[in-house]
Length: 136
Image (cartoon, rainbow, N blue to C red; front, side):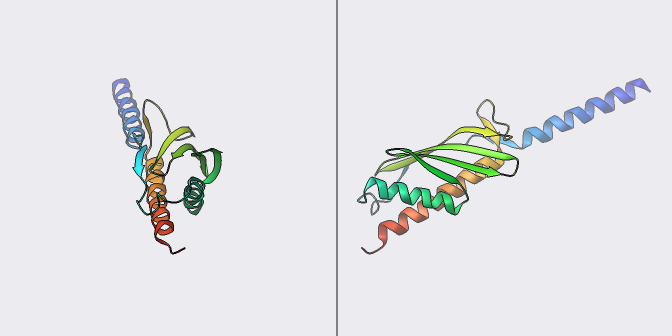
C-alpha cells in the first residue's frame, strides 16, 4: 500500500514537471533584422517613432532610452516582459531584458513571450514598410 502511494506521488510529480517544462522554449531574440530599403532613407528618430507606434499597437509600453534605443514593457495580467530594442537606419534588434512569471531561466522562457515577440516583429515590419513607401 505504501509502495503504491509512493509510486503514485512520484508519477504525479513527474507529470507536473513535464507539463511545466512544456511551457518554456528557448528565448527568441530578434538580431539585426533588416529595415526595408525604402525606409532606410528616413531620419533615425522617425524610424524610432514608427517602432514605438508598432509596439503600442501590440499593447507594449514603449519608452525612448537614448538614440537608437527603446525600452518596451508588456504587462499581461500576471506576466511581464521587459525588452530592449536597438535600431539604426539599417536594422533593429529585440532582446529580453527581464521578466516576471515567465519562467525565464538558462536561456528559456514561457512560450507566450516568444509569441509576443514574433507578433511585435511582424507589426514593426508592417509599420516600417508602410512608412517607407508612403508618399511625402
